[in-house]
Amino acid sequence: MTAFRRIVAGALLAATIFLLFLTLKNPIGIKNNLYGIAREVMKKSLELQTFNWFAIEGAGFRVKYQPVDASVARLVLETAEAAYEPVNQMLGYAPDENVPIYIYPTKETLNKSFKWDGAVNAMGVYWAGAIRILSPLEWITDEENLTPVFQENGPIVHEYAHLLVDYRTHGNYPRWLTEGIAQYVEREVTGFVLPEETILGNYWYSLESMDDKFDLLPNQNLAYRQSLLVIDYLVEQKGFDVVLELLDLLAQGKNISDALEGTVGQNLQSFEASFRQWAAGQQ
Image (tube, rainbow, N blue to C red; front, top):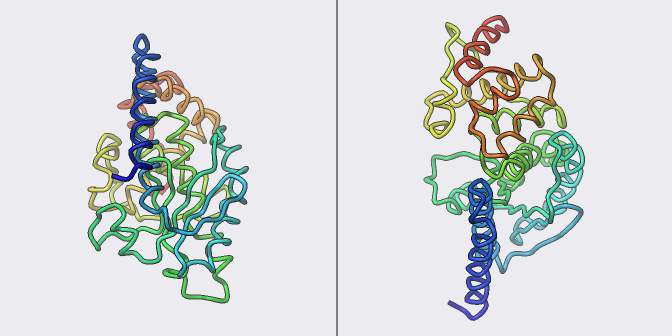
């Protein structure tokens, strides 16, 4: 370990001990601070792993890239900057510092950064305080329209919405909620929406299975579609403000069932039954 890395590790350890000392009498504070510390450690770790990458910085974001993506780094930054205020306003939150975005030149390098196998196909991923995206040069074949295609169909707005949900709730949210919110925000800001999934026989996944087992569900299109529909249902019933109120209760440490009880007057089971009844009429 280099002297620099030892200094960073020591500083992080000291910060951890200090925050634990400050929050001993506040269990929710302990949980929130520990999550924030873990997220910060992983974010700094990625920064160290990419110390030799090039970087450009703007209003709200810092884009890191390798030489092969120099021609699109500015496009990524400007796309993110254009999304900054609209997404912040929708979700009622703004980061305290510039958000790191990492451009990976190939699917293989992006997957390798997460230790995923080659079968995973992702254009963008939010994880631990940072956004990682696949280079637009890798998936956009229409070179003449690369800029508008990336701005309208790229992953920036979606992943940035995930980041804001994560920070606003201190990581306390179910997967279906953040996926639904990210798609809702993306549709409002860019107009992009995933192709609608045909629902056969009014079949839906349980919301419980759409939390920690989300990525294992056999029909991923249905899982994403259902996540968006849940948010549409909430907004139709109570307006988008109820989504923000839900995030506030989650930030206080409440579980999703109690948070729903506090916002829409239904626990998770009752809410899910009402959603299914509503969704049956949407087909």
